[in-house]
Length: 532
Image (cartoon, rainbow, N blue to C red; front, side):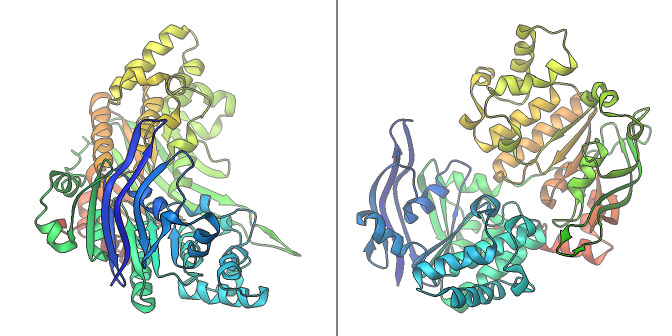
């Protein structure tokens, strides 16, 4: 029986001259999982927002959205509020921005229980605990009093699922629910959603760009491109015999190729010995928690032209290690030598002229790019510090050149960051680092939030820069498919300690340690997408 029915759904933004969805027809039955896939900007999230009635005021919507026969587009705000949360639950892509940092997770789960189920305070608190148990959070009673920042990424995503289930909905919409999670937590979230669908009889609309996840969870798959439905059908059949060129392009977009080995005589760019990062314990009432070691005694040597991939679960110390190596982590200890200089012996002023030689590229470009500067000003910002002799015109010319190098139209440098897509913003972040011609670049999850086609382009871009300039990369990622395509050595971390290290193909194809085998198994690296 059909639960969700879309007919001729069209979403336009007249002021921007954009049509986000065009005459979309879709059906979703009770107990079914429908995956909605496509590149960034294809309109996937617009479908979720249209169903929930959460599109911005400037959007113009036409067509039909029916849930169990009720036409949602004809409802006023109070009537729609009675359906949202009660009949339809939504799991957002980024729980840290969707959860209120000022309130405990228990309070936030209780809100829909009180609003849609009419529960009192005590009853809602008890049910909130049951929901945390249901989504697999350990020690649920104590976690009710935690704030979002005190939870891991996987725990926050589970809290979001608990909130979405609080109203006992018939339809659950999961919008990129595993994008920023490591592979083992991704596998746990997928298993949780499949289990909840079976036990509660949910219909699940699963929005994602990761086709490997689709193969594991979806009964049917719908492919969008530029707001239009280009193909739909049973997942196995669609993957085996894709009719549309867009579908074939998505299936072929897996990062491919292997890194050429680095000569043993290549010069050492960075050498680290005994690097550790320790944070003081949080103070509780009448007591203090013991200090926490995020990184424990890591040794590392990086040569020109070499890429070391650093992998591990969330909280394994990957990002802390990367920050420590380029002196962005005040709590770091140990020896770090960049070329012939001991960085640990230098203060902030002495480090400044050396920083052009080692540059970071962060995970979230929107958070690391100033919204008050144009993209060109952002890219050229480092030149103001490290090349003060350059005139404003010279800096602008260098910025235009950097845009061309990252395959962006140089005229776009006069735009602000919000005018770019996620993949374009990541290219701007790479251009900002590369304009200084560094010898070492620390890339912290630079592709985690990007769809596979954009990931493939970013990997190719990084390879080209490395080949042209002999760059050394420290590539931090939870995506083992990207690591396999880009790195020639893999370092596996767990709880800040080294678990395994070796050539990429050897570690990922024949892992020695159980922890590494679990990571590789969760990543499904050997699965053929055409055999869904």
